Length: 289
Image 1 (cartoon, rainbow, N blue to C red):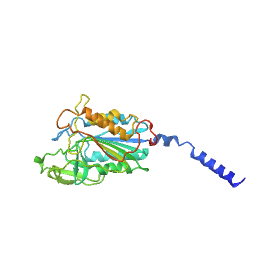
Image 2 (image 1 turned 120 degrees about the horizontal axis):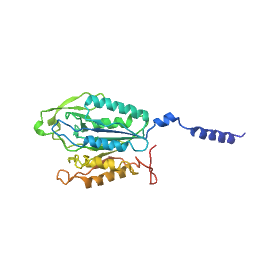
Image 3 (image 1 turned 120 degrees about the vertical axis):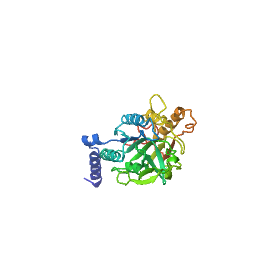
Image 4 (image 1 turned 60 degrees about the vertical axis):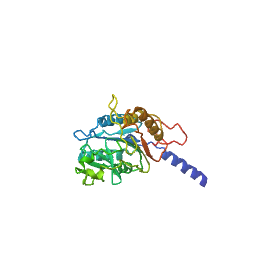
């Protein structure tokens, strides 16, 4: 038998080995998408919202129906300890599922402080770093993950300058960081949340900087942005086209109120031809396995 025959046999054996079926248990454990929503209604504070719980339930309900997806129960009005516990469980399950895409939805108040973006917990006093949370969601697995984030929060500032001496807290490390004290006056004149660049990610905001995003305004109790996310999440669209459709919908659904006339969703990140639902319809698109 010549060297060429041996090479052909080895090559054929290699193909057969690579084609062996994956363990059923492993195949069942793998998920392509893991999804999470955090929502805060701020009952008992000076700036309550009506739609976040509804928003989270609707978006996560649609996410659960995406191909090979697992969606955790929404984290609702959690304090810092509860948030850390539930996030830890989500991260552990997501690590076991080893997804290629992480989908994140947030509904509530958001703000910028000292050059970083934060979301406000349901107590109305504790700010938690968006940047730290989202980076952890992208990098905690065995393989790189593409992040798709929908941030349904006003990008202006909810705090009243008349309460400038009231104490607030901020947490930069979502799992281990200490709560650091600062005062409303330190953020009351903030210009709102800033652009986010996280690498392999697309991050959508419900509105432009310094403008408000509408709360629940329809009979369904959903915000215009979260309603648009839920309506189009399971369509066979690239992520870029999905965000474009969401923007078009919000333009139609926003209230005829001067405060919301400039609610124009914005998107940051590097567009990739990634699909959440269905298979690509264009050459070069990638339906991440």
